[in-house]
Length: 82
Image 1 (cartoon, rainbow, N blue to C red):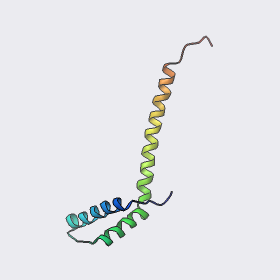
Image 2: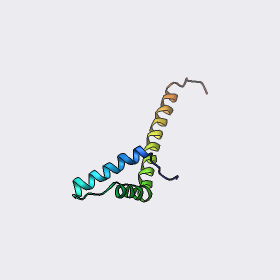
Image 3: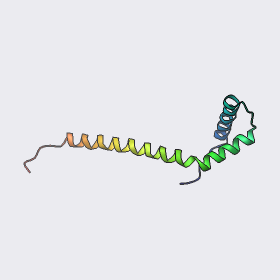
Image 4: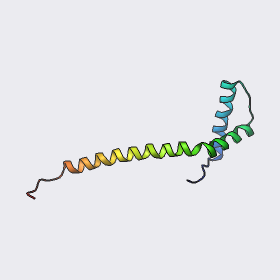
């Protein structure tokens, strides 16, 4: 798996959400640097779990669609004497 990277804009949005969470839920103020540091930690240490779950979910959808296509192909199959 390649390293999880976010654009500057995405980092800003995510860091803001982290700061907001700390403020509202933990009643603790943190700065932009601390929020970005936490984001980097979460991305490095936890991100792979979310990434893998996303792949698993995508694979499940793909397999479901593939089964549906397979059924549709069998449905249009013509009868033969063989």
